[in-house]
Length: 478
Ligand code: PXG
Image 1 (cartoon, rainbow, N blue to C red):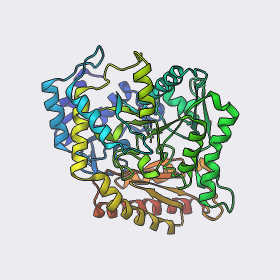
Image 2 (cartoon, rainbow, N blue to C red):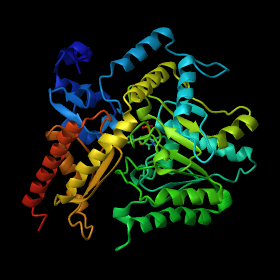
Image 3 (tube, helix red, strand yellow):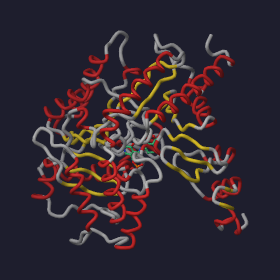
Image 4 (cartoon, helix red, strand yellow):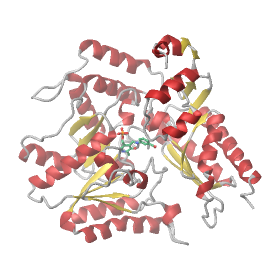
């Protein structure tokens, strides 16, 4: 590849004019993407996203696309928020970096930890006064594993090592994150999960409810899989249970209302720690600052990332509840764990500006009182569509299952890749909607208006119709 191509002017001729093919060639030659088959990508060329504003992104060919995935479940405040850029600039000019090891701290990290503690509601006499910072959700879940083990060691129960998670959960991509997660494709590569992590089935009504079973009964039965697993492992060996309030990457799996209260009863009964992985669900996504508030359970540790900065800069962390913090602080001495960028001043300054913006615009309230219910109504209308087996929302995430027969819950042959066909139509029609198998999912920016929801729903219906046409032509609908 000619070196002149590497200089930015060769790739970006004018503000709006990109040399797509040259970018794709260099991309293919040098950039290893996450979760990507590079053989396939080389054949098609990556779509080059060049700029964004509000809920839209533009590609290098000038196409405007409605981003119903908020980047990757993170741009909660929408694109183009100048005050977040200003916060980064000012902090970089004041103190771009200093570490928080060796009894040192910095002002934005202190302010952000204080702010987060004030946003996490107290439940059942428990509060979250402490925060451990990282730079991502994966790192935060590694921190959780370290913290949970340290906690039980300090309490003289080092045999409590097992963390129970769920199949089809997503908790990140590091060794611990991928092991905690329940993605079979990830476990298949590299001898995962690591020892002392085990999984139960997910509370996925469509896949696992018995014929005739109602959602409430299914929710209780699904929660009791945790109790069965605790007894199978041995109650004195279980350290913690980790779960997403609503499974995101697994396909927006919303548990029945009976699920979380029963999980709480079980973790209380056996005294195990509860980790709420809110990397997707916190910061307004479900209409609350933190999602455990919506479901009314009492976690001991909360994983966060993504929406804390609206994705403008990497930041993650763990909200450490009193139960764990007290033991670590009062009995623990030095906790031999941390990252160079724990409490990064620029990331923390951007997070503070983002939380202030979300507070001022009342984005959690906007989701809870206005656009969340509106999306729920509009999404429910899709249940009439011949391809839609079930369509549901929770706050500002939504998922629908494309089914061959909704009464019998019969799915299309996976070899057809119906979800990918639908996703292809979305791409062509200027909509970013994700396919997880044959589930189509969205998590739009929380600044969306009702008019923009209408625009998005029009596109979703258009893409479902186009998918239906394809299936009819292929003779798949009888
Ligand atoms: N926990 C949860 C619940 C997540 O959704 C992570 C942890 C890991 O965060 P980091 O920042 O390390 O990526 C996530 C991330 C998808 C997709 O395909 C979802 C995520 C990441 C990549 C892809 O939906 N969620």
